Length: 82
Image (cartoon, rainbow, N blue to C red):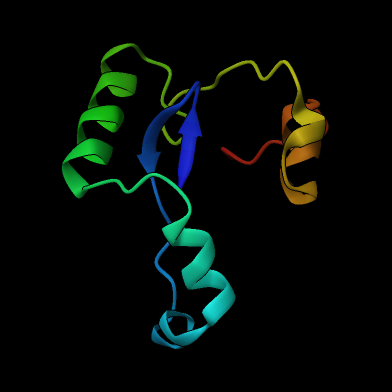
């Protein structure tokens, strides 16, 4: 799941094998459950506000919390949009 200010907007599919990984299932069960409609509404809201990270350039105030491969983009060192 990906969130922007606690608004869910997309997710990554997991391969089927992860459904049988006890630690991943326990982690999922200990968190809030979201329906696809929640993600759809969150994504639409961010698109309407022109701040959806997949479509709009947004300023990240704490890029050090991002995965390493994304930090150089948000630090202005790399252009991932082409």
